[in-house]
Image (cartoon, rainbow over all chains, first blue to last red; front, side, top):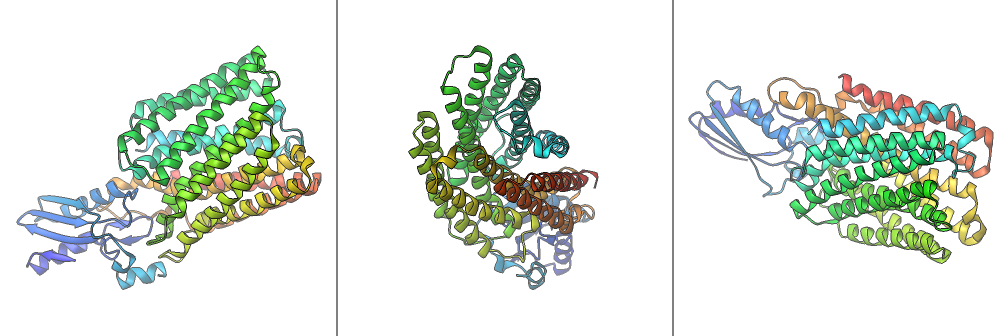
Length: 105
Length: 409
């Protein structure tokens, strides 16, 4: 994951908020699933580049609005821009060790 | 989108429970008797139109934007379709129950009009998306066969009133059943499974080349069987069953490829039973076809026809729909109730809306009872048919109520 921001504390707060967004089918948060590719911050604007486990995922809209809602909860964030990309394609190896263990992978 | 698929799915669930209530008290009666009777038509159409087709249409409306990544052509047309199809089905069932030729003709036409609107709506969505692959082509073919099923059904319905088909009525009946079972349900289930199974198995990097072969063989089986029934040349029906076996075998190999590429321990009991029902169907179709090749007279025997129809319609179509419902209903409800709260508050996972245990117990019981019913039908044992059939009704109703309980979470 590429993070273009050097305020580690603020980035951690954003990542913690993103860990509150779950794939409801798998029961695992999007950070541990490896769906978050990039987080960019510019003052009160936050941009999140992410993917989904499969193109045409039924959760597409819910995941996007979930990310917007979760990050918007932070007091120093005014706008959240979510971009869903399909390149690079998500592969199961992108999951964290915890997520793999949870799924029995 | 919630309301449109929900309307179809809840109507289908009610029809399913009604079918089993009506069947419970009279299992040995209509199941074991001649299916070509008003009583048989009533029960079969309650199951295939009131439940399975209603559910399938709801699933198409729910998943079409997922599959195509584009919006449905018209939601309003979807509601008009629902009104026409639900009223047509209800009137048709009443017509069968009372054996009222006028009602059958009128309401079969109404249901046909609803199906045409459905085909128009989905067809326009497919054309808008311009995304052609085995999933979308299977869906398009399935809907085309649904229209032909409805057309042949409507013609037979009108024949009850105006009596113009003569010997072609029975030939149309064969084509009607074949188009509906193998064409509509077969291609819709196989096509949607190419999308749904990898999602639920979290499967990646599995081969997809077999999908176009399955599509080709399956369509060939539909055409051969249809021509066989319409022409009355049995050789084409035999060829259709042989080609269907090839298509089913390839389908089973392909879903095995998907399952082997999984990245989670289990896809859930509903999906596992869906996969197993396809394997069992292949075995039963091979056995049925072999029996007819051995003794051609069996092809016209009611007992074998009833056995094969139950194997296909309940053993595979119904079990597959029930298996997928264990995922589709929690998804539908979650997106409606909890989707807007995602990221803001703690929301349950789908597994918390519908735990694995009741799905496993429910579907295992249904499959076990179904096995007993097929054994009873295969051995012509009325006591076994009655006992297993009643147990099947109880298990199926409890399962559907448990699935419906998700809407209270």
